Amino acid sequence: MEKNRNLYLDLLKSFLIITVVIGHTLVHFFPEKYIYNNIFKVIYSFHMFLFIFISGYLVSFSKQNINLDWIKKRFIRLMLPYIVWTALIMILNNKFDFLGFLLELIKPSYWFLIILFLYDLTYYIIKNFIRKIKNQIKFIIIYIVTVILIWIITKRYISQTDILHMYSIYLPEYFLGVFLYSYREKVIKIIKKYKKIFLLLYPIAMTLYTYEDHSKFNNIIQYNVLYYLDYTLSTNILNIISTVYNHYIVAPLGMVFWTLIIYYIYKSKINIKIFSYIGKYTLSIYVISNLFNYRYINIENIDILISIFLGILLPIIIEYVSKFFPKIHYILFGTYK
Image 1 (cartoon, rainbow, N blue to C red):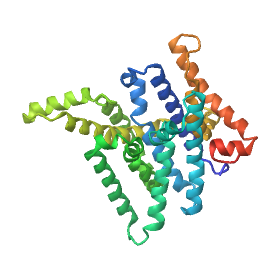
Image 2 (image 1 turned 180 degrees about the vertical axis):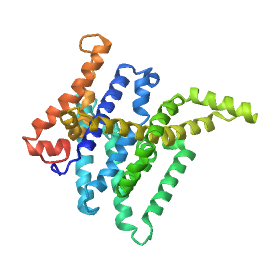
Image 3 (image 1 turned 90 degrees about the horizontal axis):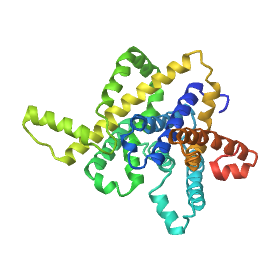
Image 4 (image 1 turned 90 degrees about the vertical axis):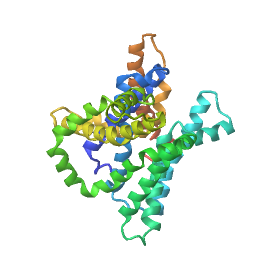
């Protein structure tokens, strides 16, 4: 697998995990106003959608058999760190108790790991237990549409269970990644042909993007509907429209935009091998980086930069050192060195 690593994918994963660290750092330093931070909004408009897409793509890229042995390995790789680090972070913060631990597993901080495993499990079930269906792609599309409709109709109830809420949001990107691998050459040709349009559309779409606070988007839509149709939309309808716009218009455009930007960097004469090295440590950076969000010298901007730097470097060091102790590495990161 090491010999078959794709340098571009490692570079893309490096970029994405850095955006994750930056996003989490901004939340820590600006807990009451991070949703209005422009850097934060750009990051959250695309980064987890693209991360999930790549995760699905790598399922096909790895060319492994989607069997029981594979799902067991995925459970160990994702769920073991999910459980262990959830407990460790609570212990380090002096907040551990068994009931609280169970609640944290249900409404998790490390939601990416559990929903990614649930996507793998969904794919495994579809691949192995629904063989009688002649066209699995049609079934998966129907399944995705159903999940989206359930999320839209019962959003206020699903939001009480964070795992289900997150699962429903990113599901299309996972299966898009799984199946796009087979059509990657055609997709690449289309993106290259219309690259200027994609590079233009995303910044335009971002002018209406809002995170959690949908007031800006809602006001613009309400004004135009009222002006042209003489009709007033309810706040709930506007929030749904805003959410759909963010997830299924802005996010896909952002995914294409940033994959193009990273591709240009990949094709440039810049030495990217050192930078792409970060992409091999995405899991450790994801689970550990938040430990280093502190105020170090009481200069806000400098402290943010220090937190980001340490949040990337120290997890890499921790995982690298743990590789000399295979059992510890297995427990912490779900794999032997």
